[in-house]
Image (cartoon, rainbow, N blue to C red; front, side, top):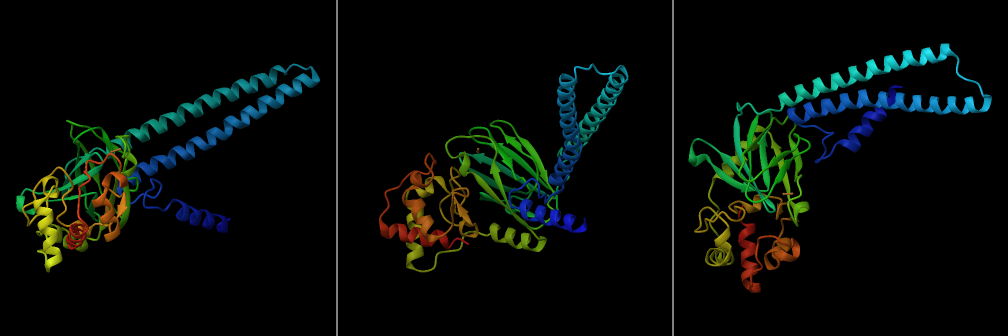
Length: 332
Ligand code: CUA
C-alpha cells in the first residue's frame, strides 16, 4: 500500500511537474484553483463509477428478465425507488458542495489591490509588453516577453490589449484572464516557489497565436532586486568598432522607428523595448532562442521565422547584419 502511494506520488511529480502545468501549482492563486480541481475529481469520479455500476446492473437485470420471463418482485422495485431517492440526495449534496466551493475560490481570486508590486502587461500581435510601474517615474522600466516576479510577494498586474482579444495564462501561477482592447482587466499573483514557468496566450488572436509565449521567472528577493536594478540602467555603451557600427546602424535605419534602447536615440514603442535584450532567453515571444544565429535569421527575414509579424523584412548588408547582431547581443 505504502509502495503504491509512493509510486503514485512519484508519478504525479514526474508527469505533472512542469513549467506549464495547472496541476503543478506554484502560487497561491493556482493552488486555490488546484484545490477545487482536486475536490471536483474526488466528488465526480465516485459519482461516475456509481452511474456506470447502475447502468451495468440495469443491463444485467433486463437480460435476466428476458431469459426467465419473470417480472421484478414488488419488494425489489421498492428498494430500487429508495435507492433512486438516496442517489438524488447524493447528487444534490455533491452539486451544492461544488457550487459553494467554486464561489469561494472565485472570491479568493478577485484582486484586492494590496500588492507589493505593480505591473502592466499589454498584449500585442504577437508579443507582450511588460511595464514595471512605480509612483516614482525614475523607478519605472519596460521589458518584453519575459516577466520576473519576486518570491512570496503579491504582484498586481493590469492587463490590456492593443489590438485584438488575447488572454493571459501562466498555468502554474493562476487561471486565464482575457485581455480586451479598450478594457483594463486585473490579476494578482503570489508565487510560492522560485523557478521558471511558461505562460501562453490562451485566446486565438491571429496567425501567430501559437507563438506568443511569456516566460515567467520567480526570483528570490535579492535576485529580483539585482535584476530590477540592471533593468533600470541604460543600455551599456558600445565598446569597439563593431559594436559602434551596430549601434549606428540601429539608430539611423528603420530599427529606431519601432524600438527603444534607453541610452540611445531610439525611443519608439511600436515594437519590444530592446534596452536589455541580451538578458532574455528568447526572441519574438518565445519563437526562437536568443543567440547569434537565430538573431541573424530573424533580422534578415522575420516573415520566414514568424509569418505575419509586424517586424518588416529589411534589406540589410552582411557587414551591417553582423555588427547589428553583435551590438544587440551586447545589451545585457
Ligand atoms: Cu495572443 Cu493568442
